[in-house]
Length: 138
Image 1 (cartoon, rainbow, N blue to C red):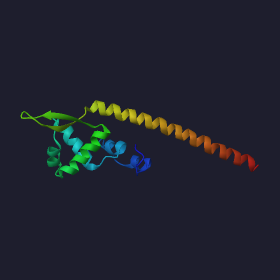
Image 2 (cartoon, rainbow, N blue to C red):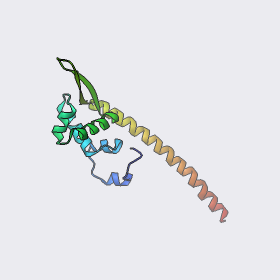
Image 3 (cartoon, helix red, strand yellow):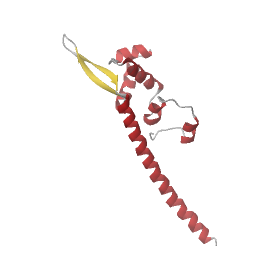
Image 4 (cartoon, helix red, strand yellow):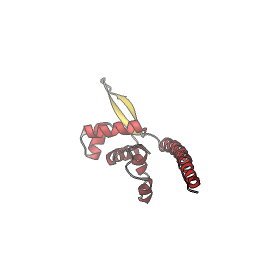
C-alpha cells in the first residue's frame, strides 16, 4: 500500500473489496485507471490511447494520463507498431495476470515485513516506557 493511503486498514477490511481494488489499494490508481486496465485485459489485443479514450468515453489526454499511471505501476506494457508507409504509433496491452499477481504478492510480502518491523519497534519503544513507569511508581 502506498504512503498516500487515506483509509485505515480497519476501514479497508470492513469494505466489500473486489479483486480489482488491488489496483487502488497497492498503487493508488483511480476508477478510470481501473476501467482502462479492464478494457486492455478483456481485449487481449493491443490498443492505442485513442482506442481506449473512445471505449471509456473520455478525452484522449485523460486516457493518456491513466495509461501512464498504469505503465508506471507495471500493469500494462507499451509497444511500438510501425505503419507500412512509415511512422509508428504506441499501443498498450495488459501484462499477463500471473506476472501482475507475482508482483502484487512480492509487494504484499515486503509490506508485511516492514509492518512487522514497525510493530516490533513500537513494542520495544512503548514496552520500555510502561515497564519503567511501573517501577518508578512502586
